[in-house]
Image 1 (cartoon, rainbow, N blue to C red):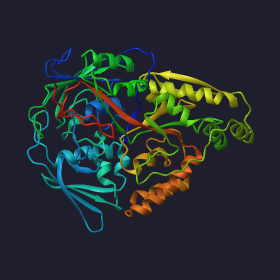
Image 2: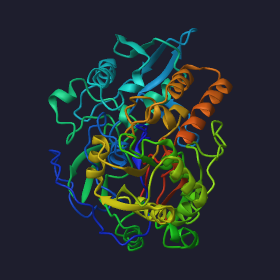
Image 3: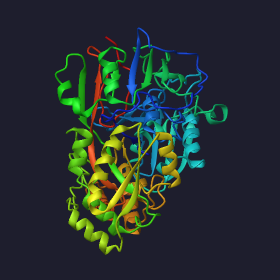
Image 4: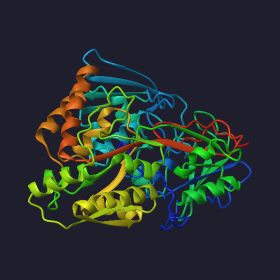
Length: 510
């Protein structure tokens, strides 16, 4: 987003920025849903505005904060341990050769327009992603065919074993099931027809409004609706929470976390995430195509200092992507902060200093600005002048996709399987390989790991691949943050999650 792609995410740090992000109004065709919440409407303060609502084409976390509550997938991560469990599919089985997966669908599911859900909707959704080569088409790389022998059965035939198939189709709402023909009947960027607990009512530059779906297969939500308000500045979000203007926020000032633990005005929870923060350089621009230049920058950066400045202890520095505690964590850390060694690497690369480098971040996720400022101060002593380019998120995404950058920084979330952390970001031509990295050996290792069913052997393959990725500085990994969220005392039914998925279907207001 995950995410996933796993998804692009940043959480907020304490900078004095405007309270609301910009953006044009999105006409969803909904019936109002207006302004200040209501007696039984949950108001959630988030840091940025969705870019669009088509689950198959967006890769922005702000969109998935909303879509998590609007759409469903065949399977879904368990909120406690992220193992995959039933959702629209109530059960599944695999063939002895691991090449055929048969899913039995849940009965009695309704779309928001009142139509019945069946296997044709699953086939349509998946084939749309595959045929139109949408953002997550790589997730079906091993899919030979999708069959629907009857309305309650979906058969996925594979060309090779795919041990992480459940994570591929269920880790986040980029794999959501839309109704058959939805993309031809609706503008899915602004409208929806999902099966989730809430319907999309309206969205504009200040808020997105959802309304409870009374015929939701999991039971009608306990709140009448959800209003997402965009409050970029963490301090402003916290103030709104304490004043009772909002009920929930994930935009908590990192420097306030310790003091908030004993604050009776809010309930605060945190958990280690499966996110990672990173910086990456453009391999198509000199001198960043030179591995010694990238290694010099990786050697000059003090990850502990960046982590402390951005997160005030609510994160752990990590030179690889997968966090400690995971079976797939690779405890590899070749870069120690050393300005002298960094200068030597630049000399070996034949690069004269001073060297100018643009570092693209977004003010809608202030944490990226904070971390970038620290990195700029750390690169200055080795002769690299960093211009921190602070953009709105839509422009950031557009420039990333077009390759219009020297370097950029943000994070990934929703990572469940090790492939989520590495594959499409670093395999040649990967859908999220915006930096333009290409290493045939890494391609081979990632491709092999994706089909290896033995977990120990799979870990060995990912360890070898991630070691090369770190050495090549395809990504300059920084840290794994915690998920930190706060809400009104007395709010019930909400569960904080390591994958940062936000689900309000079971929430009860005090």
